[in-house]
Length: 179
Image (cartoon, rainbow, N blue to C red; front, side):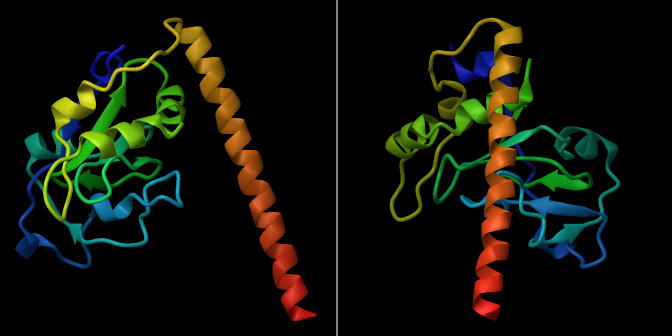
């Protein structure tokens, strides 16, 4: 199936950097907030903005379980939205799953999506992909929503187990350094 059949694919708003302010209500999410080392949007960096235009807010404010895709630079990286008060800037793809968002996130992180987006990217020094290229990504996936949910849940539990063991390992390494 095409990715555009299982998710709504959109992008963000072209905010004016003159409107950014440190005390802004919304964190403006860019490609820089999507890193290889993190499964979630990195909210520790970025600009903030206050915005009162309800039409723009309703279209570009991010919701938990949205999946973001980098469209410039290192294209095809993905991250889940888990926090509130974030708003999407242009040139970042937003996928809103039509069924199970966890399955969609896990499905996109097998490595194949990243490889395909890197392969089809275009441009000179800075590579780019378009919304239609993201929407047009084709792969095999279960047609049953129940099976998708089971797969998404399984891999989510596995991710949590890996994170737990990484923290435990880091703690042991810190103890070793202290000794």
